[in-house]
Image (cartoon, rainbow, N blue to C red; front, side, top):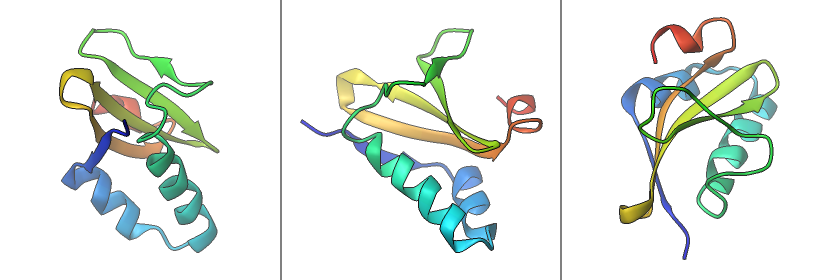
Length: 88
């Protein structure tokens, strides 16, 4: 059964600000794929519990939380690798 994907406001804002259409589609396809496979090959669990993971898309990272009992993927943040971990 596929998961539901919700994108928080901060991550949605980052997606809307992208000007490169191809890169936007790469990010969007990766986010949509999380609904089928919430822990794909190459994802890493971040320390600190709460089932927070990251997945790479070029130099950017998608930070998301997996809530298994509700079948929910919550996209917390999207950003460049040198900046995205400062807010999580």
